Length: 232
Ligand SMILES: [Fe+2]
Ligand SMILES: [Fe+2]
Image (tube, rainbow, N blue to C red; front, side):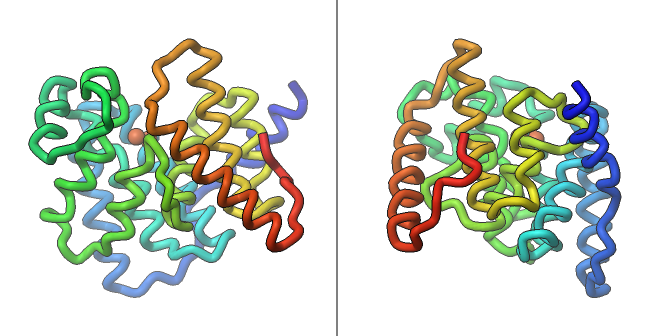
């Protein structure tokens, strides 16, 4: 219990990072945050979560030398479509041709990021596509996870308002102590364990993503002589 409190304490100070953004970046961040507040107003807890993910993503980005501007935007917008009713979300996913190899009804909780990543570029044409890729794969991960994708995925999983299960606490404890790749790996594998232990439906594609990432980590370790530090 003492360890848990200490870890949560560690996450409390996640206020806005002191990042020297350019004036045009501040303008965009202000607009995106205002839009997010308006979009998620019907779901106040979802809004608080999104603001918290944005702060956490910014923090992780600063820590791991990723662009904090893009990380914060991705955090703000990642759950944009969480207010869309389930049936409508599935309809929109069909409209965009999203195919996960299974009936979309069985994976509805995963669709909001994929749909938002296809809708929001029209609203924000000046925001770089890396942001949309990160939002696209924030629920499912992907074979081609880049640093920004990992930052958003991890931030979504460990933001301080999220209740800390054992797996989440472990990922939190790794931040700043191991590479971003290792923090992400723990969050990703911990998520799979959570699904399996809870008897929930596991997207078949997740197994392919897991195997691809596991092989690439093994190859990297063989090349660099790294140990598998921080793995679940
Ligand atoms: Fe989400
Ligand atoms: Fe989220």
